[in-house]
Image 1: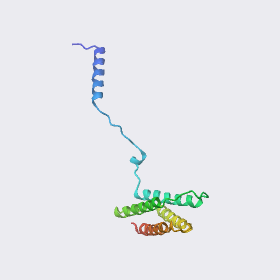
Image 2: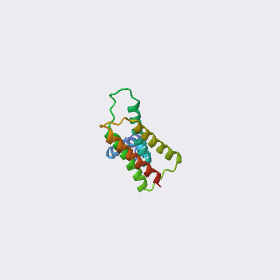
Image 3: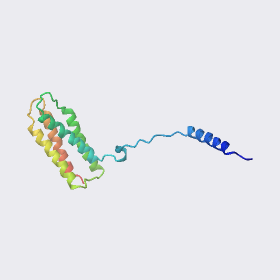
Image 4: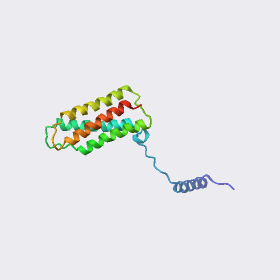
Length: 145
């Protein structure tokens, strides 16, 4: 039995398309974050920079309508503290001395900005709480392995 090239190619195409319709393909979502997940240090640093930027923007703004969300800033500071706790729990240390110096420097900048805020009855608790959290973060960061 001789199969002609035309019949063979037609059979091949039918089989190929029937198999490809049966097989489901799942898309692979590759993003930078999935390939290179953030470390606890980087998550903490990102939150710390957010607080620094928000305070700086509020103090530099000549517009009185800039509202500083105390809850968001305190939440970000607590996230920084959590990240440092996770680094200690997982026995992760910052290997680069420049990273450690940069982190401590940002904490100092935030502390200076908090000292420049005019204390009112509306922000007194926020300032005290933020200063306390920053002090604890700095102590934990210096102790981390």
